[in-house]
Image (cartoon, rainbow, N blue to C red; front, side, top):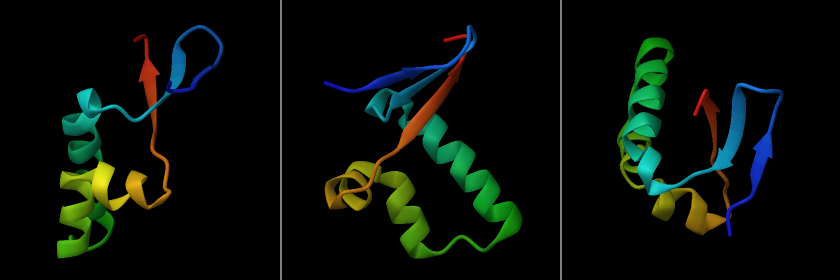
Length: 67
């Protein structure tokens, strides 16, 4: 079961869930493209974080602001 970390009132930190896949992709694609160069490995990780990050022992936390 995913762990949830709650911060005062408006921000909640939750484990990655495929429900957040588009937001995860969009946010990370934007900052990588702005400050770096998107590479094939970045694209793969963002398109399938379960396979390229989580299944390899990594963790992804999502911050929810007012849900």
